[in-house]
Length: 136
Length: 112
View 1 (spheres, rainbow over the protein chains, first blue to last red):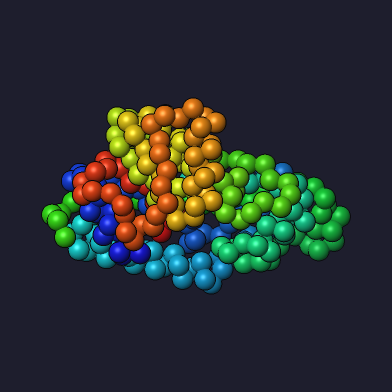
View 2 (tube, rainbow over the protein chains, first blue to last red):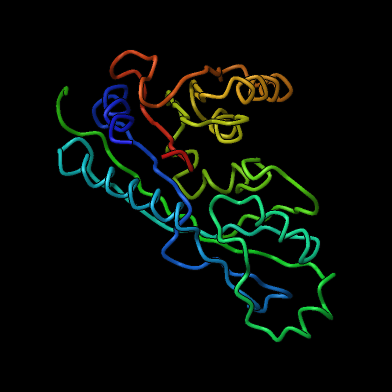
């Protein structure tokens, strides 16, 4: 990751900008139905490890004086699912999320309404980094 | 702000259908003000979702991805969309096949 950031520093002109955007794993993703929070989704251990490694790489190149922060933010990304089974199929293959929803509603309600649409909402974090420093 | 996609059946987890719409995501980063008249590089471009979005404003966009299949798909999407200022190359971020100081903006979206 640091190698890639060094390469990006090389190909950016002085003052150029790097946008680094990734799912923001410090907050749980929401599972909603009709706007109501009915469950949460955690990030898998592997994805958390990858995110931490990416964060460390970004911090390192800032310490090296190659980039400085020009801005950052978080926005929400929503996906609609036809029903709970469709969401579960996605989770079965997901490398980012744990494979089970942590439900906040009773099991009988989940069963009764299992064919209704669901929405997941997750946070995406980004940082704008200005290329500074001389040639490496 | 939220981006919404409708997902009903099985979709590969790397699919653009599972990512925000390009115009929504790029607006968060600065939109036209960030890209207008610039030469931009999209690392991990996949099917070209963001690169093609940037191409509306940028002078030139290059999309890079290690997956040749994704690059073929990105080129097909560019042809279908009539984008003339965007090109795609197979390559990895660890060894960028470009000269020094050749880009104004680099985007790493879900790629680091």
